[in-house]
Each structure stands twice: as structure tokens, then as C-alpha cells.
Image (cartoon, rainbow, N blue to C red; front, side):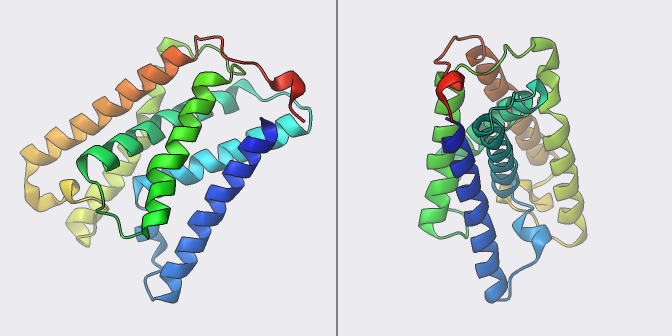
Length: 201
């Protein structure tokens, strides 16, 4: 389990760095654009959390509850990434198909299954469900500011010219989806799952 998490975290980090290097090579290496995508940000966050978790487990050390809580939040974000991309805006990204498939299908699925099936996580308290919101709200704020200043937004549904009503509907819908995904993750944390901690090396 520890090796699997560390390896997956390292792989996704390497893919993100590789594709960013490709963007730089073709003269499109603005980091604020590349890492402005919610997919790239949350994939990087999740991969670093998995890497840290895996290293701790392999080293025989206890994983802090705060790190597992962060993994739960990251899992919820990736669920939203997978659902929105595959159901609402499929094929709209600029990444090669294999990168899109990895970040929008394979990685979220593996992370979700890890959370659901492996029981090395505490029951997440419902009173902390609200902590899913500060990060996406901050991201949305930065995106909207860029949208009205330099005209760049990562996703078409956040374009300022769509109007306040459209933006409000999409923003509220996105935040509601994040809370719904979080509720699923919080609920899954109450299942026993399989505890492989004792046998992971």
C-alpha cells in the first residue's frame, strides 16, 4: 500500500512536470496558465499527499491524521474533476489524450478506490466538511480576476462575457458538486475497508 501510493504520487508528479516541460519547449510555458487549471492543481496536490503518505508507511511511521484528512479533501476534488471533465466538457483540454485519460480517469479512479477500499483512515468529522470550500473559492477568485484583467480562464464556463447569471450558476454548481463529492468521501471514511498498514513495507 505504501509503495503503491508513493509510486502513483511520483508518477503523476512526473507526468505534470513532463507535460509542463513540453509546454515550455513550444513557447507556452506560463506557469500561471498551466497551473491555473483545477485539474493540474488538484492532481499535483493529491500526488504530493500520496507520496508523503506512502513514504511514511514504507518507513514504518504513523501517518498524521491531518495528512489523511488532506487526502480525503483531495479525493473529493478529483471526483469532481473526473465527473465534470468526462460528463460536461470531454475532450476540451489541450493535453495529449493519454495525459487527459491519466489525469481525468485513471488517477481519480485509483484515488477513489484507495480511499474506499483501504481502511487506514479515520472517520472524517461532518463538522469539518466546510473545509472543502476555501481552496476552490480562492481558485475561483483568482480565475475570475484573471478573466476580467488579462482575459485568460482555464474553462469556458468561467468566461466573464457569459454574464453574471451564468457565472453564478456555474460557480454555485461547482461548489455544490464539491460538497456532494466531499459527502461521499466523508461517508466512505465510515466504512471499515481493508487495513493493510501492518503488512505494508
